[in-house]
Image 1 (tube, rainbow over the protein chains, first blue to last red):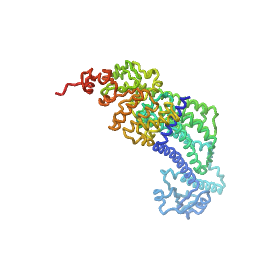
Image 2 (cartoon, each protein chain N blue to C red; image 1 turned 90 degrees about the horizontal axis):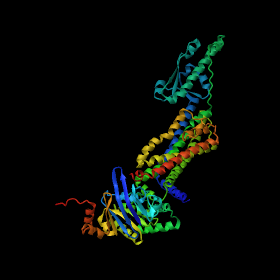
Image 3 (cartoon, rainbow over the protein chains, first blue to last red; image 1 turned 135 degrees about the vertical axis):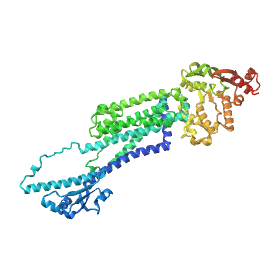
Image 4 (cartoon, one colour; image 1 turned 180 degrees about the vertical axis):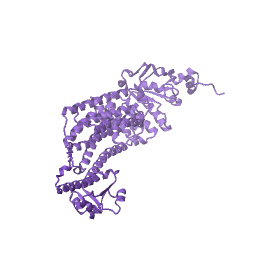
Length: 392
Length: 244
């Protein structure tokens, strides 16, 4: 009973101490705010680009040479014909225009004589942003051309299908919602990073920082079992980690809800239930990550040295996140008992609209917490080492 | 009451403490005197229960430090070599934290904090964060947190290190006050005046061994030197040829 009270004493002291570390909290906030801001911006740009390709302003030079063709273009949805700049090539080179269509002055004459009528499509293939628009214009020209071809064949009494030996049928199997799930893969990654960075400052400050300041020896002179001290510090770090995950989730979801997904043909939908499922997955992970950081920092004599270790460690939760973008981890709930990887796998299923059974959450939570407790026991042992108590 | 018998500690090949035995009784001040590197801090670390001796026994008020360090720590108040504080906490918060770690809470804690602030002259600094404190002020806070549980045995590792004249005087007054209260005070020092001004008994350590143990007068007569500093030098085996 008194151990529990002492645990509370250590926990609240470290929370108060951590709360007063303005600089640490500021850098934590920046990290938590920046990630969703970057992704939100990225998605908005992506959506904007797709919208760009749908609704294009197409500069046409020599429109008077092909009135029928230009009329046809104007009738296509989302296409607006505008006058071309005086020097189209230079305008594209200078990135004033993404694409310019130049119609030859003999266009109508060539059409009438049924010889290929030249049009020039001026674009810059090094410009990624212009690519969807260029592709759209090219497909419009091709479409007009094949329609003309069909009309000519019909006029000559030939079935147009004769000129079409192969017909390609495209079958897109991924639904828009699945595409969304892939994009949402960043959500677990963001949250895992928030879990790691949230408790990091306290985890380092209460171990390596305590050694650096020379306050570890006086602390260990108190008649308190090492495991109680370690657990109090760990809980304080995890408290900050949980706060950071919650804050990051609210922020990220709110940012994602403001992305114009409809421009990408996607209906954004993350339910509160799914968010709760993600929390149920991630909160146990916070406790493990806090313990991992504490364990590594206990070996460090100073804050700086600890940050060196953590720099490598931060890759640990990132690797499965990055792997999951290459090899989807969905539909693999049996990964659940492997900490970090399991959370990513289950999170992918949650976001993919195929929530795993409750037992998988329990499995992931139990093994993750068990690893955290094992690390806590190791930290308590480390705090008995003379090299760590007195080594400064 | 502190009883140390046959203490030994080796670090690799170096024998930091070879044979240290002495006792310190309640109501007395015992000085642990020795040159730098004599083994004073190592001895005190073993006494504190944080370092395990290779051999020997340590008892504090009948608690066995080696077997039950946590039990023994409740009887001891220690000002160790490292006096790190938490820069973002105030002196009051420091004392309260350590009081609670010792299981003191409520009115008892409030009273004790007040008494310590008064006794150490920390009242003006009570609610300021310690990050900007001077060496003397920091030592006072470190001392207050070591005394919060009213230990019967007070152990101070070079308590006046880095203190100015006024703070040194305050420290001496405090040590005398602890003796008046019936505490057993053990402190280490390499400064002669301090030891002679305060101690009822002096234990001289050199090269990890106790080389003398007695009252200041006994040490003077033992070495045949009138001056305690000469006696110390003679005992430490540090005497080099007189400068001719």
